[in-house]
Length: 244
Image (cartoon, rainbow, N blue to C red; front, side, top):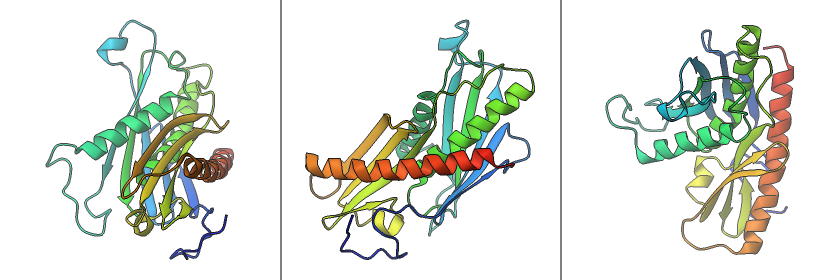
């Protein structure tokens, strides 16, 4: 895909930022990673709670839920710490997205009446924090389930597929994969794709900031996103096959 606009970091329009996933990042969590996508860095940690929400009590099913937050200086200017104010609407939306994404590829009957808490904390933000959180949280969740199996809590890993997420934006008629913050604020269309490793869609979030987009443009963005998802799935597999 040819793009007329030159990206600040020199990437072609269809290339991801450099991605690095470091496993076992935290000592105490059942699973944890630091995911770096360009200058965006997110710590994803999984905790196992021996109970479920009331609506699942006595059903034999487990639950996966997420919390998402940014450190005050994850951004260029200080962001008010969320312990001081209520979680804002954006963060609440992202939390629900992360939870839905991980539940979509997990067998909730496969780990008993337990809750897997997924904490995603942005320590440095440069665009794509929600997509990085989903991509990293998947790896942390796999590790958490392996920890549970080693402890005799489950017999099988209750995950049927991988899941990752990536952004695609339109800027001045050109399309760009995995936008950083500088690109994101210029985009007149911003799409987030959550897709499984086998290519099934979990969620699409599309916003026309300044002008609408056509079905043909949607198809172009989808092709670009799927290319990125395939690469992210490969990166996830490589991370999980390495000794942490």
